[in-house]
Image (cartoon, rainbow, N blue to C red; front, side):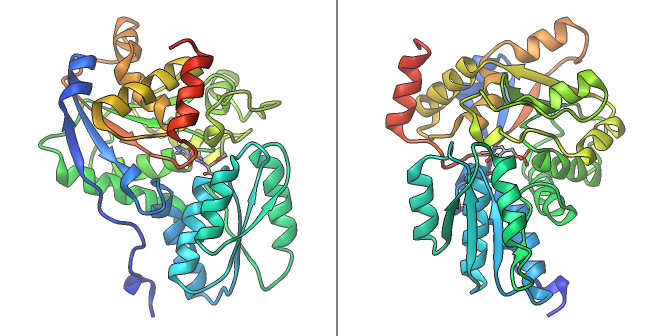
Length: 323
Ligand code: PLV
């Protein structure tokens, strides 16, 4: 089989215009519903591509360190391609995510407090020549897979959006998104990258002018919790005409998750709430007031999804933040 014959493991997701979110934002908001991917998030686009290519090259077993969603995508991809998967999770990932991974046929290991520490263990396991290491965000095959989302969006939207809003963890989603935007001719469309305080490795790097390793992940958005953003993200950002990095508080991300649950009956984790906070709150208007963004008639929000959320947990966060 040549790589041209690889069947994608992701599905084409809808891009919908949201009446309630548009009303809250004061402009048209289009949602790319990546939460509808079978393993629960956009991750299957990139990880599916990376794992498929690895299997095509002869890999018989994979290992991936993950906050949860990359692991679910890797486990799903491995099962579809009939190979075993080991997923290494940090202590911060809830037990119900570990159970979901086991249900998908994966072997689950726990190592480290945060993803970066789990990754050290995954690299150790991958010293076995039989086991292929799968990075959750820093690989060109991942970015190429994520880029497919923008090609779909460009076909689905009635016109080019005035801004694209996306969440950033290690930067894999953003890299793919920018590659996709360039491919569809959206190099002039501003991109707003959202992080939460305490998981803000991109914002910290942009302030310093080079990569920064955060001391810890203190945000509830554990799936944005890479301590260091990948170098390619910093390189890509320099190439994009209008790029804005915004950090919101956990409270804003949770508030957005709650509003979104009511507005669309969709449960997303805080990693995704960070992007929704941009359209439920003042982020876009603030950027305009600072002359960083021009007029916005329509925005595209990547609803990246995520499985690390339950109704009960969302209610706990609601109480925790007095929402
Ligand atoms: N989550 C990674 C890293 O976790 C993981 O292992 O699943 N939105 C959601 C719902 C995510 O799960 C992630 C990444 C992101 C956004 C950010 O994507 P990235 O890492 O490609 O920037 C620690």
